[in-house]
Length: 107
Image 1 (cartoon, rainbow, N blue to C red):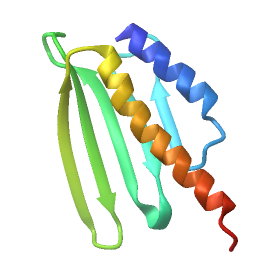
Image 2: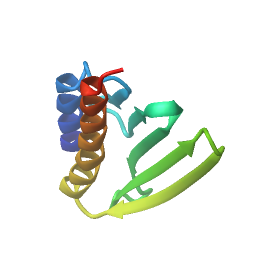
Image 3: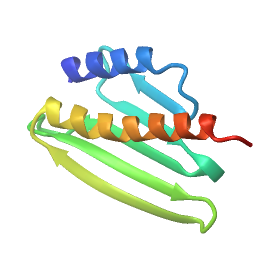
């Protein structure tokens, strides 16, 4: 988990100014959490950890849709830290793109 935590901490440091994005990754921690809040209160979160035997990574993905009150949860398994990082960065990148798009749209 250490290399993954270090990478997520670096991403957190680089994205501190992105509205609606919070990355909590402690260097010596056993879990990381990524929270993304979008328009109208849409919430998307990832809880990253390893399985009890430390053989694979687990990512619990949760989405909340406030307009309908619906929730969706998914459990993803990855064999390497690189796969977890790629999956996480895709979602973080989408959050950044949405925020930049909203900032450019005239009110």
